[in-house]
Length: 240
Length: 134
Image: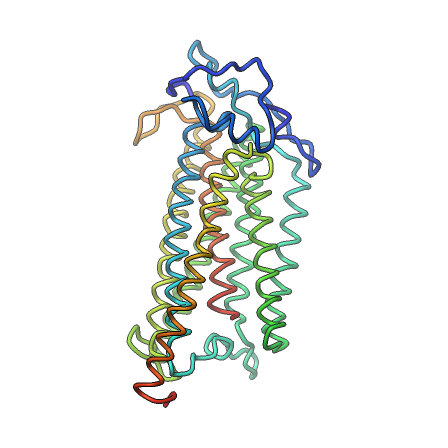
C-alpha cells in the first residue's frame, strides 16, 4: 500500500522460511506481514476477533447443553421438514449449507477474475454470491418463523431444555447478521468493480483511500469466514 | 517472497501489486496477488459438497454414539481446513501470518476443556439439589 510507512527491510535478500522465518519476520522492529497489505492483515485480525466471539457462543452453548438436567431437544426432529408426506430430517439446514458453500465458490471465482481484471465477470459473480447469501438469509427467516410458530422462545420450548431456544436464536441470529452485512458489502464492492473504480484507483466513500482489486479478495476473506462459521454451527448445533 | 507462496497445489501466479503504479508504490512491490487456477477452486468446491453431503448423511442414516461425533468432527475439520487453506489462500501465505491467525483460535480448546469440567460440576450440583431430570 502506498500509505504504509515502510520500516526498512532489505527486500532484495531472500527471507528465511519455516520457524526461522517466523522469528525473523516478527523481530527487529519491522513490518511483520511481509507480503500482505495492511488491509488484508487487518481483515484477518478482525476475523480472528470474530472467531473468538463465535467461539464463545459455541462454548456457552456447550456448557448450557452439558449442564442441564432436562433432555436437549433432538435437532434432527426439530428441524425436519414435511415434504411429500414424510418428515425429512434437517433438510432445510442441508440446503442452506449447500447454498452457502456455493456462494463461497462463486466468491473465490470472483476474486480470481478480479485479479485478471475481468470487470464484468467479477461483478456478476459477486452479485451471484450476494444473491445466494440473500437466499440463505431468507431460508433462515423461514426457519425462525417456523420455530416461533411452534412456540420456541428464548426462555422455553415444547420439547425439552429451555436453553435450546436462547442458544439457537443467539447463534443463528448472530451468524445471519454477519451474512446480511456481507450481502450489503458484496453489493457495494460489486458496484465499484462494475464502475471500474479499481482500474482507475478512485477514492472510496468511507476512507478516501484508493481502491484496488485486492479489495475484492479482502471482501472474499470476510465472506469465506461467514461460510466457515456456518461449518462449525452446522456441526455443533444441528448435527451434534 | 515467491518461495513462500508457491506450493504443490497449483501454480500460483505471483506478481507485484500493479493497481496503480506510482512513485509511492515501494511497499506494494513486495505484496503478491493470490491468483490460482480456476480448476483448483472447482475441485475444492466439489469436495466441500461431498463432505457436506457426508456430514448430512451421518444424521440421515441415524448414526449414534462416538462414531457420530467423530465423523461430524472429521468432516467439519476437513471442510474448515479446505475453506481456510484454499478459498482464503492461507496455504500460500507466509508462516508468520498463518500462525498469528490460526494458533490463537486453537487456544479456545483450553477454554473448552475448562468449561467441560465446570459444566459437569454444574450438572452434578443440579442433580444433587434438584434430583435427576424431570
